[in-house]
Amino acid sequence: MGRSKTKKAARDAAKVPGRKAGEVPQAVTQPMAKVRAAPGTVMITCPVTRKPLSTGLAMDAASFASSALVNNSVSCPRCGGMHTWSKQNAYIAG
Ligand SMILES: [Zn+2]
Image (cartoon, rainbow, N blue to C red):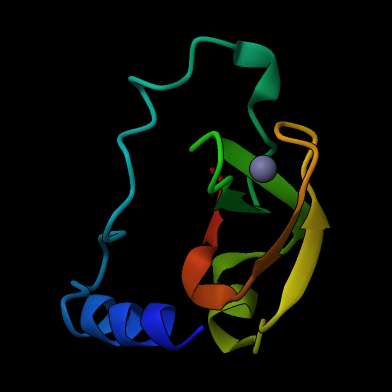
């Protein structure tokens, strides 16, 4: 995981408040309305399919900001794998 650590540091440094660095515009990549998560759902992006994936957690932005979310695992229905995610990989849907 040494490689991703360096990459993460670079991305954090480039982060602009109010903007999600590295996120794909959702309007273009959402042909299926049924996968839309409820507002407040913590989402990640599946590294295999590059699609939004619900972590099953729900919280408001303030709780998300103050939470230490590290090394969480989620079973991915899109690719069938397990993904480990941390706060910097996640975002709140809505
Ligand atoms: Zn996946």
